[in-house]
Amino acid sequence: MDELLERLRSINTMLQKKGGFVNENNLIDLPFLDMIEKLAEILEANAYLIDDEGTLLGFSEVIAINNIRVKQMLYEKKFPLNYTEGINAITDTKANIGVESDLTVFPIETRDIFISGLTTVVPIFAAGKRYASLIFARLDRSFGSGDLILAEHSATVIGMEVLHLKNVATEIDSRAEAAVTIALQSLSYSETEAITEIFKHIEGLETRIIASKISASQGITRSVIVNALRKLESASIIESKSLGMKGTYIKVHSELLLKKVKTKLELNA
Image (cartoon, rainbow, N blue to C red; front, side, top):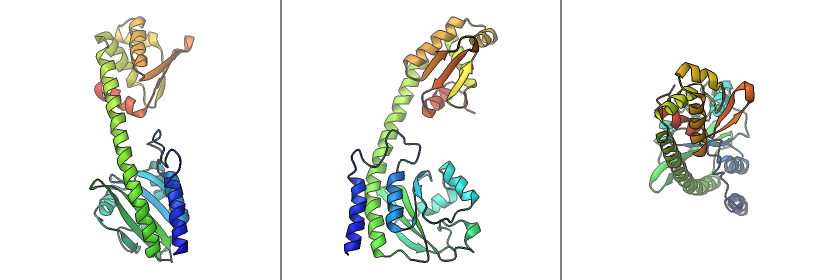
């Protein structure tokens, strides 16, 4: 009992961390990483947190069980759709799943090696809706009642935080949508042509343009291009900098803004 209490207190220390245990300013790069690393350490098991769409929100591996395919999957921060659907079908904690099950987190290619591998899945609900799943993996030693108490306690708190982050993401999306809409509506016909041509060449967040080439190809003046860039810069969508004879450097402030501009200009790849 004393050991369980100490492990609960260790988790609660994370929850009481000043500013919380999730970085709201970085929702893309494993926002729950610190929490999941702590859980993996306390439970002495691999730990993975995925949302209801299979997006990886955090993971930590104390046991080397994964092959190149799964490591690439973790790098891309996305679990397969069929596996995610199977996990989402679990409505109560399912403990000590063997490697023969489709719900095991052990790679199918290594199940003959890790025959004693056990997986535990803890569904995460908030406001009556399934938002995420905690997945644990361990070799040889089964997950006991103490482990499950810790996992379910963490799942409750994570559920509250996931719901909060969903709301934050919705607000960010709405602000980006409004900013792009207003900025593009402020462009003249010629300025829209200029921005359309520029964004055709932006694949990452940064690019370099030669205004004279765009001017010649689109039959518009350089001042039109400059004015168009200034309007998007004023809307905090891009930043631009003259490179003299080398052209103009352009950086879009976020992937979300880039996607929304391309969508509204019908430039989706």
